[in-house]
Length: 507
Image (tube, rainbow, N blue to C red; front, top):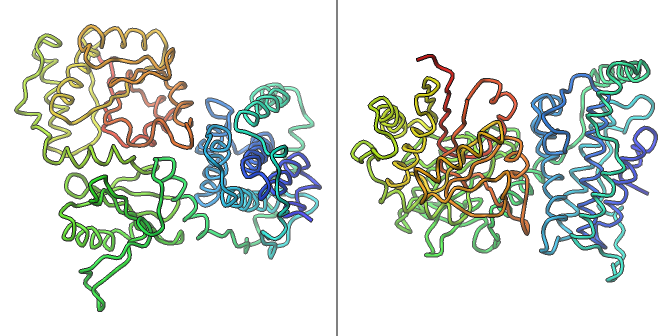
């Protein structure tokens, strides 16, 4: 018996991997998460091959495929979150030496089930799962695993590489078949017809969204390095609420080393906008501030959309995840130590021309006076755009507005030029070339877009090296519309000040 039996008729390879995921769920949680991710990868590749509505992104790895806008539009926010959850738990299994819990394997297998149900319901041509079909955890074998049956992260990493070598690259398949394979086009037409017919029937399946919401929020917090304690971090009681009882319970509170609250998270149902929880979260922040003398950053989420609100500085803004402890502590420290940009001197050894200094001042005013987080710097080619950016970075660092900066360029040659420019004009920034040196730490990181896209998805022992709050400023060299269209996921991922530098203006 298998939860995934409905896949066998038309998606045999997906079924094999999914069945391995449920078979290992209790015996070897790490392997189970690996196979769940493998099954998802095969299912998503099938979609890109057979559904003409999907556009192949800049790369054909799983992360790029599920973040492609046409994919997210196709599956919707709920299923997109499920795919991210399965992917991230699979990455955790392969890249972390920490123990993978059976609850993680259960979550990965359950979320994979819901995605596969949607796949078969939407595209099935011969057999479709019954609307009442539900995931049954009792079908997962409970036999204990001995040392010889479990696999390490390193073993699974090698297995993944071996399987990928056997897989035909999706981009090669599409390129080869697009021009000559009439059979594939016929199959795509059949799939489109089945999709249209199946979509006409209302989908009444229970996708367990409440479970997904909590599991995904927990995973995002773990990836940010938070070790949640149910007694300390979850359902935290506060006093002073304007209700009959005078108390309330905050879904999550994240604490600093000094015992003061850094952030609270209010989670609402997936059927509601996360903004519904904004006022309640503010009241919780009022109570925590009164009790501990420090106002926490406010977050509210419905599991799919996450909003961060440091209401002492900026209005609410959408974020892709949560800050790490040291990033939140730095944010708290900046509340009292940040200097005024307008009153600080621009380094004349970096930029000496009046229009360069004026450009730095205008961007500074955008951040400080207008309280905007995005600015566009347009300068004529040859007018010292890179040096102007370096002077801006220097000013922001000296005034304690930013600690780490990401500078993005579209070619390796431009990355090398930028690194050399920072070494010359701002050597204390310890610039790091991420194209050639991915492990070194510094204050300014310079990268191409594809390199950064790959690094965003990397985790080390279950934590992301580059979390959403890692960079305080992202600079986009040659900021054209095509860059935003192709690599917009980078700018959506990092919660930072953003400066686009365009050098195509005429003098």
